[in-house]
Each structure stands twice: as C-alpha cells, then as structure tokens.
Amino acid sequence: MAYEPMVGLAALAALLAAACTALARQTSRLRHEVEALGRALIAEKNRPPPEPPPRLYQSRQTAFALLWFPELVVDEKRKMIISVAAGVPHCAKCLRPMKLAGGVVDGRSAEEWICATCGDRRANTAADFTVAEAIASEAVREFLALHEDYRPGPGLKSDQPKPS
Ligand SMILES: [Zn+2]
Image (cartoon, rainbow, N blue to C red; front, side, top):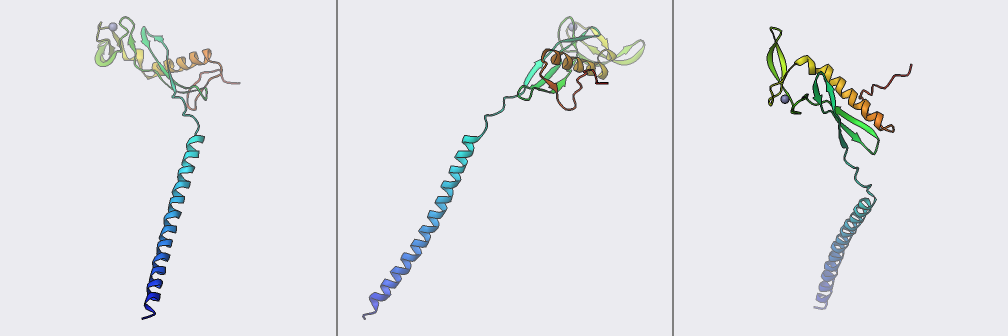
C-alpha cells in the first residue's frame, strides 16, 4: 500500500505538467495578441492624415447663345486638374438646364435643345459634342490661366500652345 501515494503524486505531476503546457500556450497566444495590438496601434499613429477630398470648380461659358457651367475636379495637393465635364447647355434667359428633344429644323427632323421654362429652342448643333469639348477645354484653359502652378491631369486637353 506504500506505492499508492506515489501514483497519486505522479498523477498530480502529470496534471500539473498538462496545466503548465496549457497555460504556456495561453500565455503565448495572449502575447501574440498583445503584440498584434501594439503593431496596430503604431500603424494607426504613423498613418498619414487623410487626403483632402478633390475640390469642385465651376466656371461659366457661353457658346451659340447658350450658357454652360462646366465643372472641374481639382486635386489641390497634387495641383492637378483631375477631370472636366462640360455638363448640359443652359437657357441664357432662364439659366435653366435645357433638354434635348426631337424637333424639326429647316423642314427636316432634327434634335433640338429646348428650355422647359421659356420654350427657347436651339438646334442640336449649337450644343453638340464638339461644342461641349470646346467648352470643357476652355474651362481648363481658364483655370490654368488663373492657377499657374496647376497642370492638367493625364488625358486632359490643356490647349496650351505645343512646343514647336
Ligand atoms: Zn429659358
């Protein structure tokens, strides 16, 4: 009967060893979690401040008795025009955006720009793609004339004189 306490001790030692292993595993996992949290905190501290959102500039152009309000999206940090959109033509009297509708010009069917407010009608050619492009280019040119340190972004027409 003298060996019984020995068995009991061995069992206790095994239990203790298992507990120690489990504890070590737990401690190691906790340490990894703390390290990960520390890294996340440092990354958060070192994160650069958020970039300011691009600014929107609107200009005003006139072509063929129609008004345009082209919009430029400008990245002020990089001093660059990101994009330009001519938008739609507006009625010169009401300043309301005009709508393109089917109509008859010189006896032939053609699309027309119509002002819903005053009923003013303009031929589609007064505000077609070519005109819109010219309006957009003029807006870029105008912006660059006022902001000399800015440049047009890739793919944007600057209409600056080409070096010869
Ligand atoms: Zn009108």
